[in-house]
Length: 341
Image (tube, rainbow, N blue to C red; front, side):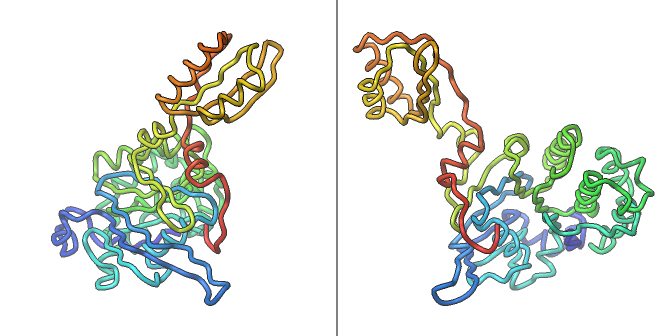
């Protein structure tokens, strides 16, 4: 869904921009949303508070049913929250919704984000116009978007005649066509080939760095999140369970190793489990391989334990955790209930 809320360019100095110049791009305070009533009621968003600084790219992650979609729709005004406040570029969405949402555009998964009877170029001009921007004034931006997303040759073809991946590119270009200050992208690389996905990631980073665009991105592709996001917010059971940089979240997982030795027996493995988190045990032709996860102190204790028992290691393999491992750890690896993802 392309919202088309954009109402002015960021440098025009409108009222919302002027009064919110030092405010975060998005500020959410104690947001809550329940669906239903009585014993069957489901709490989709449960007291979420967060801030997104201008010019940053923030990943919003969580398993299906965690509350991500409800949170995004509540921020965008598509779902009315029961409690809490949302401010966009310093403007309270309840006090001045049109002014606040003039700074926002969004592409939501599962929604038709463009008019398929229009050509690619006509879609870009249309969504710029709907947002209050003279399409002629941003024609150079449109041509750059078409070029960077490899859409120039298809620019004058109806969107309905394009492949799924091409339609996804058009949706992204339409979101960026009017020059919104804040964009929400839900699964932006879905349906794209590897080259197109990489090009899109580079374009998101370029726009954030060069124009101050703020991006809130939700994706199940952890590679995309690790590549483009400055920070990650993880939601589970309608609450924020982690909010940090990608590097900090990865480091918090500790050391993950695979140790192999012919000297591992049941007693030794029992000692392992007293000192570290054993993630797996596999019998191999050359011995037994044990997967462990621990912090630095636990690793030292384990090595001292092995030395005391004269255990020789035949292989030590370091396993770097990925963001998907972090997500599973933070959310217990389970999908959660609720009507929204």
